[in-house]
Amino acid sequence: MTGQPQTPRPPLGLETAWAALLAAAGRDVSAPAEAARWLSRGIDGAQHAQANAPAQVQDLLSLYGPLCADGGWVVGHLGQSLDGCIATHLGESCFVTGPDNILHLHRMRALCDAVVVGAGTVASDDPQLTTRLVSGPSPVRVVLDPRGRLGADHRLFQDGAAPTLLCSTNAVGKTRAPGQAGLLVLPHNKDGLRLDALVTALAERGLKRLFVEGGGVTVSRFLAAGLLSRLQIAVAPLIIGQGRPGLSLPRTERLADALRLSPRIFRMGADILYDLDLAAPEAATDAGQGGGAPAADEGVLRQVR
Ligand SMILES: NC(=O)c1ccc[n+]([C@@H]2O[C@H](COP(=O)([O-])OP(=O)(O)OC[C@H]3O[C@@H](n4cnc5c(N)ncnc54)[C@H](OP(=O)(O)O)[C@@H]3O)[C@@H](O)[C@H]2O)c1
Image (cartoon, rainbow, N blue to C red; front, side):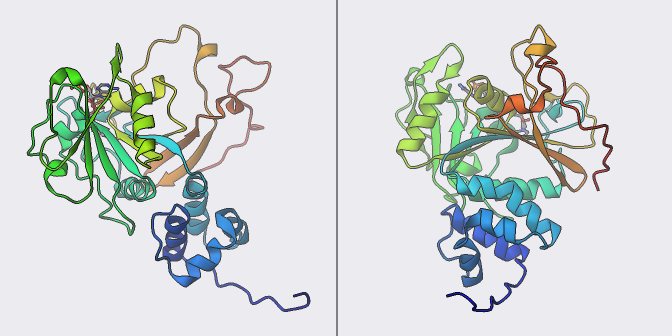
């Protein structure tokens, strides 16, 4: 109807915005009515309409909105020190990044269908991989353990907090996974388990939004296989020295051949999150200056507060 005065919508609060994001991702069907109203305009619409909303609401929608709008993705995340380590050489990683980045991990778990980790992470951290810090369901937990080296006593095999899948090869001769986990047998090649086969097998189970939470070896293999749609690197103001590496990839001979990415940058407490869209890597470079040349920003200096 035309001429009808529009009732101004109340500003979208942080809790409501998060509920709307969860509902948009299909992760929570019991979103409160206010969140549902925002959702009816789509997350993009909510974002647009929230130009005057508190900055933290805008940033929440900006970081997570695109992931909710997209039904399938593989996002890798690492929290690393300034010198590129994700843990000490003994494997201690609690905590490299601060509580705001840990909260982000829980939000990502709530928005994904499955969280994927390597055997090294389970062996070192005995993680639960649940959404204890946020509302929203815990994802299916997927562990890459090709040699069947993990014992049944790890928490995610025992706690029943969410379904758990152990990925292995036929070669280890396992007929069942440890504890309450299910077994997913995958083909392998010289690089280990075929991660493309993993992504396909999970999609067949309806698990299409995948969060690869670590560690360095696992995220690197997903990246090298060209399977990541986004890479998130949180850098903490910490210098570890000779620790466990974050990304570890084959050499690049020429800087021009290196992968320079166009980041979105979010501050998380004292940490800086680089949110990198791997579908558009060329956007970060100046045309005509070679792949290694950073794009110009008109000499602008901006302090991140
Ligand atoms: N700061 C962070 O963001 C963060 C996050 C997670 C973990 N961590 C820390 O990082 C350390 C663990 O990381 P990590 O890099 O050493 O190990 P990881 O990535 O957790 O696990 C690596 C292992 O997983 C298996 N794996 C992974 N991808 C595979 C594939 N495609 N095919 C076959 N096997 C595959 C292999 O097991 P096999 O060796 O049995 O073949 C591989 O050695 C721990 O100290 C943990 O505390 C830090």
